[in-house]
Amino acid sequence: MNTVGVVVTGDQTGDYYWAESYPSKDRNKNNIVDYYRVPVYKLRINQYDSKWKVTASKDWTGLRFMPFYNDPKAPSLKYKSRGFLVAGLSSPRRGRVLKYKRNYGIQNTHSPFGGAIVITGAFYIHAGPQTLSEYGWGSAGCVEVIGNFDTYKKDIATLGGLSGNADDAIEKLVKSRRLYYDFKAASPPRLGIEKGY
Image 1 (tube, helix red, strand yellow):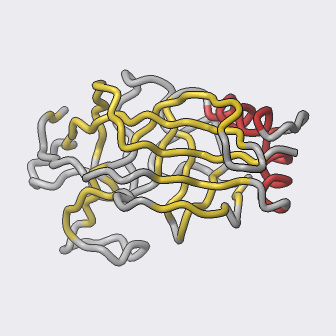
Image 2 (cartoon, helix red, strand yellow):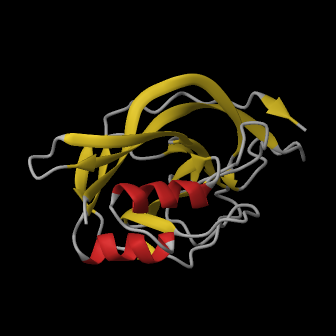
């Protein structure tokens, strides 16, 4: 079994995604869903040797910062924060993944993919839109992987030297203390309402 790291870089791809705020979608109270142009970031899955040298990797993209709006006048009690903020982890952090939620389902929209790598608290890495044209996803700060999340999980398993069911493989990596996360520093973008439908 190999050691694997899921890396969230601070490097933008130059592409953008049209996101909804979450959990409330109408910040300016005009009965139109608000959309925000958010940057797409480079993600990577690394395989490491015993000296932490990268021996293989797979590149992905994802949504790192998303608009969060919890209406102060009618808040979702699921979240402590009220009002508008750009949600996401911005400071550098690296550590061992302690938990994988194989039965996690996406909260803000429908997705055929399940599972979530727990980073800290309610901040996860999980499925996102399959393409940039699949607009309207929201987030409370989780990293959302763009594309086929089942393939992303298989890449983790393969780089970990494991075959078979990807969820089983990720659980084995976590239990064996061989799955790590690595967030690079990134400044949250300034987001304003840019589009309405």
